[in-house]
Image (cartoon, rainbow, N blue to C red; front, top):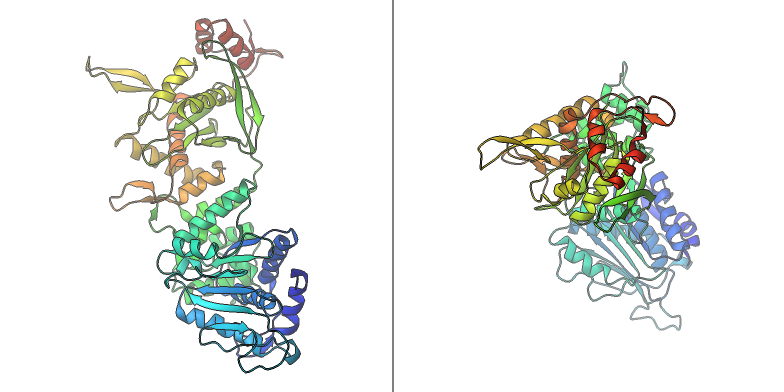
Length: 564
């Protein structure tokens, strides 16, 4: 049977038991239909079907997945499949579902079945069978995760991993063994599906699938199903029903109606005991809501989740700066080049005369990311992001070009773990670096120094500054990944704000630095005097006069010909 016939088989021959205890033909609901189409799309493309599903509760994905596996196994020779659940009760339920499919098939459609003591349907000749008709030699086995060596000795065609986030034991090791039992060939299926259970291996697998999809790489296809996709999640609103401000924002963001909002209120109060975080985990509107942080988030999680949804489709342009250098290693020319794998993401290109600032966070202990956050200093709006894992020299050169591109932006790079990027910017002659005061150990006096130093004194200050900016002007934060880090930026047991274990905070800290250094940059536009000319400040003249001929040429190209 090819996948084109599977749906017809399912909806013609398979029966399910409803919540009302009735036995009825299986008809796909809207979420099941979308899931089926994704399976079909991969199958038709000649790819191994590899899907990871993040979902709200009770949407019927186990029912559909078991139906697909049953249809394939009960109609093909030598096809072994496995269903792995998170606990024995669930394993028994899934086996009964497959058994019900078999028992309610029309007699001519039933393959021969061999007796088995396990939770297993074996489609083969029974021991007492004396006829010539061959058995299929196929099977569906249901097992519970956590058992020793589950699936390791098998060669499987289809594999369903149910409620993976709730598996006991070492989920990573169990999954590795099971996955290797399925050949990486067209016509094979692995479906991992689960509701969320905090930050665990399921979230790691989901994030990896999302990142692979973003990069255009093969791997598991991530599919998310929000609670409001389920048509039955509705209730008649009570008399006098009025939306709260939160509900109004949800309605506008996700196009919800009052019946859906009334069901949401009822479910939070009745099914979740008034616990909104539990509702978000069990019935999420977005993947961010599903993966509830275990720590106390520094920022407003509900607002960040909605903002992430609002910025998801913003038209960021991705690329890097290509440079030309002289014999001494100085940058004499550069250009912006689009590249889907580039380190720099640009949302808004620079406007003439507009002041910008760039906060930088370098790779150090516990992190290998280099970051630059670009803000329009008139409003604090995030307009570009540098985010990559290259070395310090490359980082400094990209920051130099990024700063020059954005009208010689004020740059403040953290110097805690390494002073090299800051020194490299100085060596390249970058003309607008953030200046702080530091204690000169020799003279005992405070002296000027370039770069931003994050200390036990400055760190709480910049974090509080970013909290204020997010609370008052969250609409200025446009980057999906930055907002994602904000969701996992939590207070630890000592009330120190930092990334939750296993997460990063490089983007958050660079954004906090960018907001902190804004005071050293102007906030108004410098008007050009006439076409082809520009008004230069005294600082610009000083930089120009100190520059060598090649540097002056670059400054003229960046700033325009000055009006004298």
